[in-house]
Every structure is written in structure tokens, then in C-alpha cells.
Image (cartoon, rainbow, N blue to C red; front, side, top):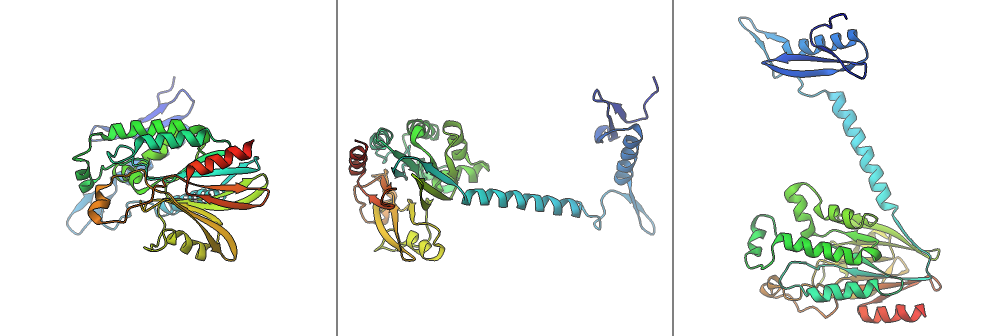
Length: 346
């Protein structure tokens, strides 16, 4: 057997791996199809590492200031590939669809659960989740802030008087997700949910959704979706927080977006803890619906300290989509919506 050149290893795959040593450490120089290619790659890498810079009275080996630390073409092509992948993802997000064969469908929007907060009406959360999953043709859309999640900086001080740990909060979130999973097609995240990602760099909420309900259409911030009911389209949009606010009109942010974007005829939001409302709106001469979730955090020291107005009794809100009349009806009462859906199913 012929001895291989220094630094060349014959792999079981039949290819040749090149390596070099510096200061007792081995560095790989790639895997190649021939011995000659492996030797050339090793020598080229050694030359790059050992290149010397000479001055009038000195010589240095290392990285001079004038040397580019990264290859310009490599960075450019990597950036192009990243943009193309991001653009494909964004396009798919804007083309999302929920398709139902039933002649009528109800979407029930549940947000601002703040599971783990001592002020959250936990029994109501699970009772209303049970009501939705037991109602014919009714489905849950989660609107963010499922968890209190005070894990960042000064926000941790808000946990000082909590009787439940962050681990307890996630136990409740997973219990809630399992409850609604059979009737849970769509979700967005909220600002409280996002704090975990700011801390860890990982969208923890998305990972939980993917584990317990992998078919849910999930967006961290803003979801466009074309709802199709028995062949009739109802383009919609949901996000936890909308830009713009008015003390006289709780759905002002949604209506402002409708005026400029005009890419939806129904939309839902949460975040404000103000009240649960469903309002008919005008979108470029078309009848639309804007709904805002009420909060399950019924006792909120932050709201009390800030002197915010007392919210109404509504928590989950809903929209009934009727294919026969191609119309939408908003409900601030979940019980009334459930009664209507049962009556339609008879």
C-alpha cells in the first residue's frame, strides 16, 4: 500500500480528507475526490495561513489590517439566498387560507389570557374553551398573550408577588392548548409571549404550538388569511396589537389599517384589555367587521394603578360567517354565538 502524503487521510467513502496542524491543533482543509486535489487544497490553506507581511526592517505573520476577514462574494451570495428564502416565506404567509365546507362557520377570538397571573379568571378561560370546542362549526383563534411571562429585566419585579412560577404558567398554557387543539386553526403571538424570544432568541410559544398542535397557522405578529366557507371568500387579518388608538373607538387601529391597506374585510385584535367588542365597519365601500378581544385578566394592578377605564364583561368575541348570504355577524357574547350555532346545526 502506497503511503499517503502528509496530512491526507483516505476516508471509508473513498474520498480524501486534507488537514494541517498549527500549535498542536488540527485544522480541516476539506474532503476531495483525488489525492492531488487534497494535497493542493492543503498547500493552499497553509499558504493562506502562513502568508507574511514585510516592512523595511521587519516581517510579520498574521492578519494585517488591509486584509478582508471575510470573502465579499461569499457574503453577497449568502445575503441573496437569505433574502430569497425570506421573500418566499412572506409570500406564503400572505397566501394563507382556511377552507371550510360547512355553510356557516364561527371563529372565536381568545386573547390576553395571561395564564399564571393571579388576576386571571382561569376557570372562565377553560369553561369558554370547552364551550367553543363543543359548539358545532365553531373554532378558536388565539390572539396572543397566552402567558404572563414576566422574564425580562425590570419586568421580573412584577413577579415578586406571584404565587405561580414561570414553569407553572407553561403547564397552564399547554393544558389550554391541548383543550382547544381539535378546533384551533389559527394563532398569533403577543408581546408577553415574545419576551421569551427576546431573552433566548427562540420563539418559545411557536415551539409549544408546534408540539401540541402542529397544523395551526401561526404567526408571531401579523397573520393574513383567506377564509373560505362553502366556496365563499372572506379575506381577513389578525394581530395582537394594531397601530393607532382612540379613547372613543376601541377598534380605531383596525379601522385605520383597513382604510390604507384594504386587504381584509374582517379583522381581530387584542392587547388593550379595554373591552370585548364587535363592530361593523366600512372598508372602501364594503361591509366589514372589526373585533377586539376582552381580557381574562380581570384583576390587573397595572390597570388599577394607571386609572384605566373598567372593561365590559366580554372576554372572547366571535364572528359568524354565512356562505348563503355571504355575510358576517359579530358577537360580543360567546353564549349567544354558541346558541346561534347550535340552532343552525339542527
